Image 1 (spheres, rainbow, N blue to C red):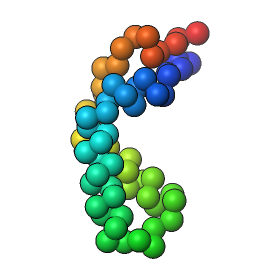
Image 2: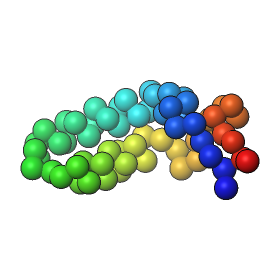
Image 3: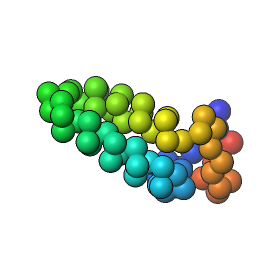
Image 4: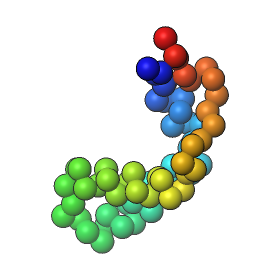
Length: 65
């Protein structure tokens, strides 16, 4: 099983994830009664809309054991 360096992956996707985070916060502010799980699911939904299904990340952030 491959491992990823999450910080590096997130930084390599920062443009799209920043937009997804902004979308999430905007929607969350309208529904402030969301649980942490609901908020995270909303962020994942927004992120998958902003990012491709498969994203290219630098090899240095992947460890295949």
